[in-house]
Length: 317
Image (cartoon, rainbow, N blue to C red; front, side, top):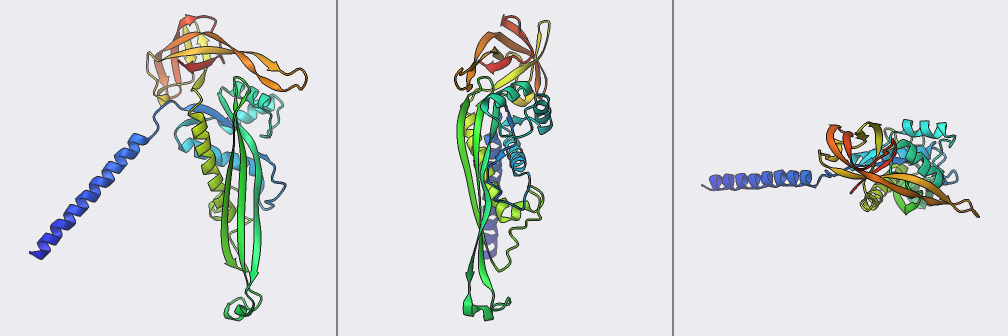
């Protein structure tokens, strides 16, 4: 009798646990982002850490690549591929460094058709080592009397700027920081200087763990900042009354969705300092989707206005 009662209770508990798993999975799916994906680009970060890292190379590029991967995983962004960015920057003789001013970032963004450029610099990327001798305890340790306890503390800091490509203005400036420590006796393999940045094994190093914290912070800050930035796309091609725009089923687009079209106007430059102060934008008209062609492509028709051109800016009403 007791066995039967116990079995029933166990079955009831298993049923409840199963329902909780199913409901939590369904809740997670409901929480998945299903809105329009905002188009952004991430430039290589300028390495301002003054050679603190030593064992790793191309830290600015590696950090940018890690950020791109993390942003794509959020399913909230369309991140432009590096090859396309490099091609445009080479053609414009901007160089391949991420150390660009807002003016340059805005020009790159317009050429590759994104509304927002993420750029910035790595201000810290290094490891501090401290050693605590254990004195008489040395004879108790397998390493002998010279043994000591080491603590390696890695610290990574990243300055991030968000540049609106239509105006050249820096909309947001944020900082992401990460710190991680490891402990060992005399030899600490957590440094692993032979591990290539971002490759297999890097995440297990003390500097890799600090970097991961920075990337996670950066993604949170970018996601939060971009919530206040309206979705922006571009006209890809105009053929008669057919206007091809770079948004489609991936963004949940449907026939009947309407947009306002703008054109970047004169760039405003301070005559005294040469500083880029933004650019005027001119409203061209309105368009409406008549057919969703693909994940990132739709055909629209003019609703108001005329003279629409490739690279004109498309924004939701």
